[in-house]
Image (tube, rainbow, N blue to C red):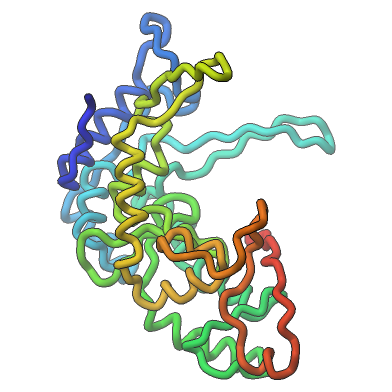
Length: 305
């Protein structure tokens, strides 16, 4: 039985070995049931030196947590960009795009600076836009858009900086300790994507560990794949202990929308007798209650750029 290390350093080396072995498997010789995409075949992780991490902290005026530093030393990013291909249906052309797999702090400065601004810019868009987000700790909501922005900006300055890892996944940088969660941030719709770095990587790159097992379903008479019990047990443990965790400042935003409650292991605040659960606000400002503007509205998808 495969044992996933608990110690973060041992885990990161284990993770490096598993993923690189999967990406470097010779499919012409080996008969693995699972294979990686062509673009990542043969990829290697590129770690950083301690002095390089120190330089990055100075450059961006940030501070990495201890386990984030370990991640950067052992993994950091891979030696290539992620390649996505799709068809432009208007003209029938195939489009090829490249983007960072995990952000490369040496070369992806434009993307990293954009992502460092992403939480502020996209949450503010929900505060001032059609979703009308306003959390309780901000006090009475002003009518002026300028005042709303000023209140939000002051709050944001005090909140822990979110450091980009991959796409719109971010490490919570404060308190500067091991075990901080990783958040998935899409405007004000924020969820915990991993309660620590270990659980996050298992979640994000589970398909790259080549740990899926074939299981035969007697009732349906067909084979399907599932993750090993060990990974499911880690996820279950995280859900059980989540209610005891606290994320400074960002927790209130996570819990604003009903989509965030499951990542905290809390009871869903609305009736659960529907097969489709709406993404609705869990806090409504008193002035809206008093003015009878209390219609619970579905969060609308915002195509942030």
